[in-house]
Length: 509
Image (cartoon, rainbow, N blue to C red; front, side, top):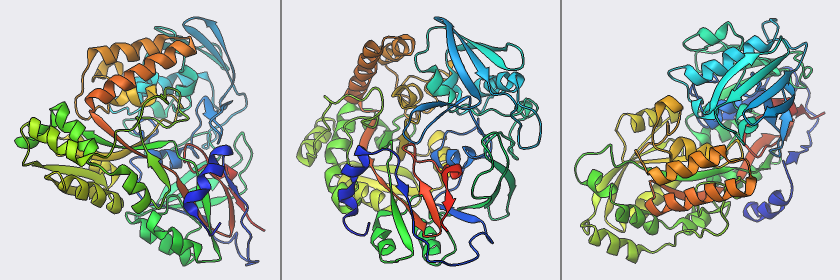
């Protein structure tokens, strides 16, 4: 494990989810304290319908279930629904698992499904509304089945259902769920004053998990998470920074577990927020093209990511349905970037405010240095994901550096939420930060949502991407892969969606 972290990725792609069998040094007392998992960012909420955030999902996936779920290798599997059948072009029947209880002891049935999906669709702060677009209604068919009716055929409906958590019907009427109750393998115990979360394994329908007690810590500094791991105060670090991988390898009691990633790093351009020169400049497609030409993304892979990545050609990962292998990444061409800026009237550049999630300093520095070479002056502001998102949504950002994981395995996940023009009533474009609107792209995406023939649907999604890349409302930057860092007390299994699924974790004996 200790040599060549960048060269290992070919073997990762050939496999599925990576499993680390970590050799313990024979220390006693491993069950006298909980498993400690350190995150390099805070979660947004404990309410599963009011978030669509990778770290938050990594917590809530252990407490809640959906009707279906994805395996570590991204295969669709039964969860609270044991089977499903298509009644006709627009109706599905899902049969529910019997004998399931929520962690508070209450019985799970069809009423909870109906209430949960309606909450996801109608809650004014729902962040998962785009996943239920096109669902006309859900009704109970006895206690053990539901029938879903859609306005049109929805080819990716089951994929979407994996991300719609089922809550007790009593909780569905709350403005915000602050003490989660679910059917997942872990019960929420409490949240401490410092933000840490305590989870306890319980005898859910899956059985009791091998690791009974878990403490989740949320740190603004990824380096601090690694220091805790080195000092024995943490057992797992979800996302160790690239510049600390060599340090981790130097410690015999630590391991780096290869972590596949579906995410793509992106730079959203927000011309409708800033006033003055930046707003006018960013509204010009020539300027947006100049931005991507000015960024030495291949250089970042070697300098910043230590070889653990590649340049992104488009908005989705190569394994996601909708990826187009014919699209080539924009080249690094600062001279052409300068010519485009001059042509647009910005030869002397302009200043922009770049908002990002704290802890990405090396990448932010690389963006700042590259843009400075074409006279674009970057003022970077970091914060938690929630803080960064609040700035973006309140017009306090010109550029937003973030990542997107198509966890459904389908390109519509990103395109419907971030590229389709904003349509709150239908739950489309809710994360279209720059206000991009193109009727042709909207039509392509809406056709894809109705198309049942996979080959034709793939063409529609690919065409929507190609058209969007001509305007560049969002710049695709890089595709990353990485590692989970662990102590030798535990055996962990990583997932392609990067979530921490504690049910698959084991103590080493």
